[in-house]
Structures are given as structure tokens and as C-alpha cells.
Length: 117
Image (cartoon, rainbow, N blue to C red; front, side, top):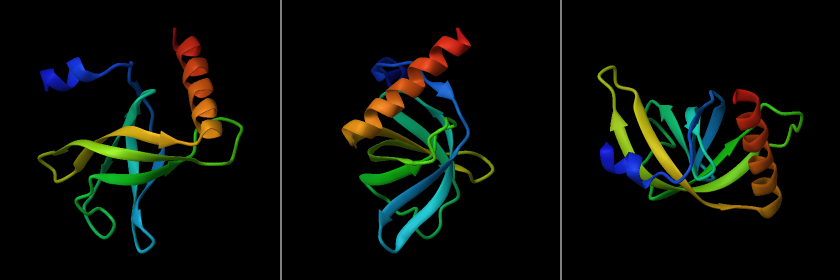
């Protein structure tokens, strides 16, 4: 766990939103975010259809802002853990976001950081 903490380049903030975890057209599931940062997101879910063992997954989620359009990001799986109660947690590093979505996401994080300071 110490190595993970050392690799993080940005602060993580707790945020619970639904995340579509998409591996392919017929392989997707809904998870819940635990926290997020400029560089990635941590999600929790229960394995089933659409969970799989991906190296990459598309992650689609809505921010609690005024824009109804979800953010879509390609995530690279960095770690996976299982809790005692069977809940699985995955950490994804963002590998790609469209420039428009990245700008909106960064604006959200900046505003959120100012509000919580």
C-alpha cells in the first residue's frame, strides 16, 4: 500500500457517483466511485457480467455539476483488492479523456478543491 501512495501525483477526494464500467458493447456493469483525482478514479463493485479482468476499461460517470453530459475516460487498471465482505475495489489511472471532457473535469476538481479548503 505504501508504494501506491508514493506513486500518486495528485490528491484524492471522496466522491460517490455511479460509474459505467465498459469493457465492450455487451460487457458492462455499474459500479460506484470511492474517490477520484486528476489522474484517476477508484471504484467498487461486485463481480459479474462486465467486470472481467481488463487491462483497460471505458469509465463513464456524471459529475455533480450543472452539465448533464457524462464524462468518458479510458482507464488503465492499476490495482484490484477484495474486502472481507466480497466487495471488489479497482483503481484506474486515466489514460485518455477528450480535451473537452478533460477541461470540464479539471474545472470541477479545481472548484471542488477551493470549496473544501
